[in-house]
Length: 214
Figure 1 (cartoon, one colour):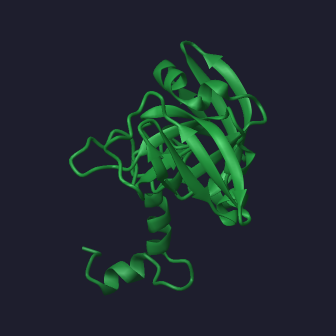
Figure 2: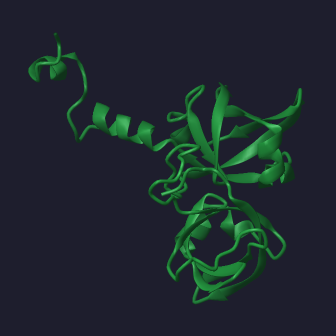
């Protein structure tokens, strides 16, 4: 589990094919991994990966064919910058929102414009994901916990404050860039509770039946 608060920006220093999958080696010069153990979960550009071959400031991770197809990790090459967040420890501050590191889909940046001291970014998303996006709700973009400012028919808009712009890979964003998206998990559970055809619907009759209509 993660929070969407980026701890550092790492860099892809090597990649190689391994039996159809890909193994990435990622340097984290500003984040010490000395206390990390083999098998730690680390969020890389919004994707939860298992760390292997740990060094003081670098680690490797295997990326499956499925993950390569469903995320932007297949687009990366040596020199690519990636947002890094270690998994959440009990007792830590939950500064963003609960993030699983399981990417729901890939969006594309359609606009990057100055907005006073901030930067406004518009992103198109698949229709299957937009239903979970709400104005002033949370969404994860390349591992970053962000708040949705506005919604249009096929896009949503984010306001990136100067600090977030400076300490994440969003400063590399250009029109056409692809980004990993994870919707707020609460929205998915609400949909499940309301009913998807296989579970009871949360409606007036359901509430009356269970004594919650008073």
